[in-house]
Amino acid sequence: MARQHLEVLSALDKAKTQWYHFTAIVVAGMGFFTDAYDLFCISTVTKLLGRLYYYDPTTGKPGTLPPNVNSAVSGVALCGTLAGQLFFGWLGDKLGRKKVYGVTLMLMVFCSIASGLSFGSTAKSVMVTLCFFRFWLGFGIGGDYPLSATIMSEYANTKTRGAFIAAVFAMQGVGILSGAAVAIIVSSAFRKAYPRPPFFVDPILSTPPQADFVWRLIFMFGAVPAALTYYWRMKMPETARYTALVAKNVNKAAADMSKVLAMEVRAEQSKEEKEEEEYGLFSSKFAKRHGLQLLGTTSTWFLLDVAFYSQNLFQKDVLTQVGWLPNVKTMSALEEVFKISRGQALIALCSTVPGYWFTVALIDHIGRFTIQLMGFFFMTVFMFALSIPYYHWRGHEKCPPPNNDKYCGGDHLAFVILYALTFFFANFGPNSTTFIVPAELFPARLRSTCHGISAACGKAGAIIGAFGFLYAAQSRDPKQTDPGYPTGMGIKAALILLAICNALGFVFTFLVPETKGRSLEDLSGENDEPTIELQTNGNERRAAMAV
Image 1 (cartoon, rainbow, N blue to C red):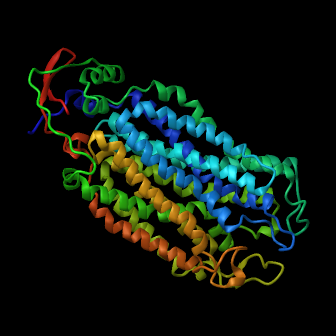
Image 2 (image 1 turned 90 degrees about the horizontal axis):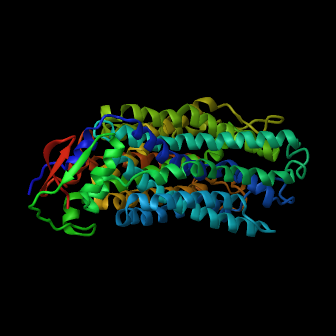
Image 3 (image 1 turned 90 degrees about the vertical axis):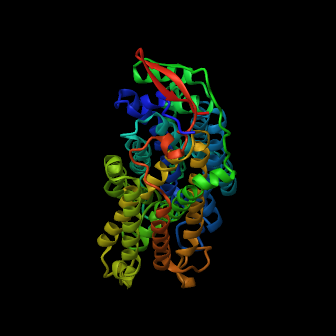
């Protein structure tokens, strides 16, 4: 049975942009700031952890994390994130968005602090406790994905919904930049307080014992922005769409939105109501209506994150290989943290962060589909431009002494620019749209679950990238592999593989429909149920109640 639009939802769809919308963006966005900060700050300190806990004087090289430890430290939070996305996505549909929203935030706060307090008297015990707390940190982060996206999509009006959800997600870029900035500040302060010679001058003195506080402080700072927003997150009312369409309490939805929209929205049920049987996630009706859409959102997010997280988490390794970062022996431990963080900050500032905000500015004008297709296309182009002439950009052989820490020839600046452009079009492209679209396509009673499934598939891709890229990017020459690693396919072949993932993402984007300018109920097919009477500011209008 066709139905008209529920009045309280119509009021949301047509509402002008108000102060409350910006408040919601900041409150939800601070969660994503913390998410990105915690997930990506690990890349600034993994080299330091190796120097502190795994130095072997017989090698003549700075200490490095063994392959299994490096993979675990870099990837365990992603495993927790995947589990959290599935669990809290499901719980958000069962209990309501608001009831579990605070739980994810407190889990992030506690585990950020606990990660910095990782204890033990041996390298193994420190790494085990660090991985334990980072798993549960990821679990809390995972919950924030479906809940923040769903809450923002259900609060937003139709005209600017894409920009609002994108603005929440754009805080991820600020979090990445802030993680690098905090690492720069902390490492600089410790370098000034405890100056040390480079490794080749004195291997022992190059790593001061006080450097153990550096990575701990960097991790613990991630708790600050999350803790500051807890109070406001708890004051947010449940979304009207969940209250009306899932909890089926239209009067409460109208009352909540009256406060939010600064206008009176009163609901009065009609005498006649018919309830239509609701289909579940594993029903044939869901498969028929949304099966291809779910395949599209999951596959594109998966393929994107294989490439995106490989590039982000192992940025330091790529930049070292092309000679943009100095040889590790020419730096002290704290200098290495500083220069890795500086490189990450420059790429974030020049490409990652602008890409997010280009999406915010343009998504409601040119649409999700166009941005995603364009993003995947240019990511593929630039990744092939990096990988196929890789040795041209890097240089073919090491220079003779005293510059034997660099590559002769090549064009390192051009490589970094192309590398940065892949980040720009990832964020002005599928990294933003794969987060937005799953929060728009599915029915309210399954919206958080389906977003969680889509996001979890993305994190499965991120895990493959995090664990696989370390091994795949190793040299084919056994003499040039990092200590403890088997031979791999080399960085050139690994980058080509990432380019192919981007090309496949371009193809699977055609399974995802455009959602610009349409109400959530039109997109999900929920506009086909009985009607109720509503009054808004004393003017009676007819609308429909979702059951």
